[in-house]
Length: 111
Length: 209
View 1 (cartoon, rainbow over the protein chains, first blue to last red):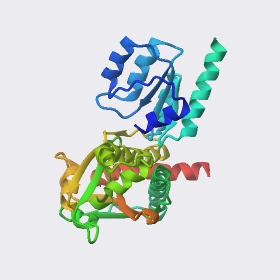
View 2 (cartoon, rainbow over the protein chains, first blue to last red):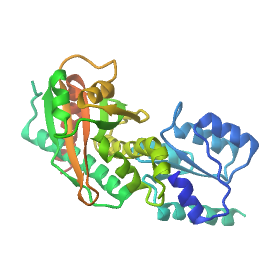
View 3 (cartoon, chains in turn purple, red):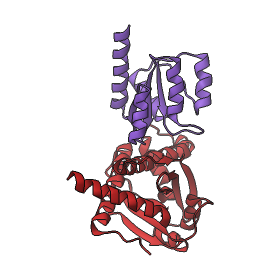
View 4 (cartoon, each protein chain N blue to C red):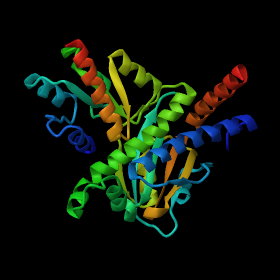
């Protein structure tokens, strides 16, 4: 809920989808394409990196960030291996805006 | 009862807990935009029957706790505990844009879970990184009760018999009238594994330093 508030602050026109766990995220992704995925590491059932791996397999261009206060080296390295950013909680508007600016830059480069 | 540590190891242990808990305090401070002060960590070994007395907050009966189990080379529970009377103020502090009291009450459980999740993970991941280990953490659980209920709920049914190690750090947020503490409980057998990691850490200091 805090993340949603921050996202609206960055760009009120963003279309935001929310999923409570990996299975719900999979269902949402079957219906809609996405450009950016913010994935909490800690979630019921499986961890956020497993979900991130499935999101990554859908598209190399999706910008993915793992969001967690659990900044263990192993988790950060696994995020990097999936070409995902690691954003440490508590998330600030600046950090999130920085991540979005970087994804815009990547997209304009690859376009 | 206390597994013996050399002066250097004991120093490294205090430093490790200090860094981890300070990081958690900074994290809490950023979430509620206030200064958080901490006491020096206390490490005690007590029998299970005495844990509740060790964590009671004088003048407070009802407590709320957010706990996570952790496991890796050593296992235990990390718990953030504060008086129930502080709960809404804490939630209000992390949701400054929400004015409606009903809405705050509605969000209380989710917000408490997230506060605990962030603070405890920030503490445990610092320990893991400093000791170069992997530690798995469970999802946060919230429970209410007196100190004795909090202890039995945070340890779960699988708790080993025998004494436990308690790391205990108090925090105070003066400007918001909040107080509470972070507690890490480990069985003595887990503490022995933890001590081995501390010994390795101290060795690595002397090799590089």
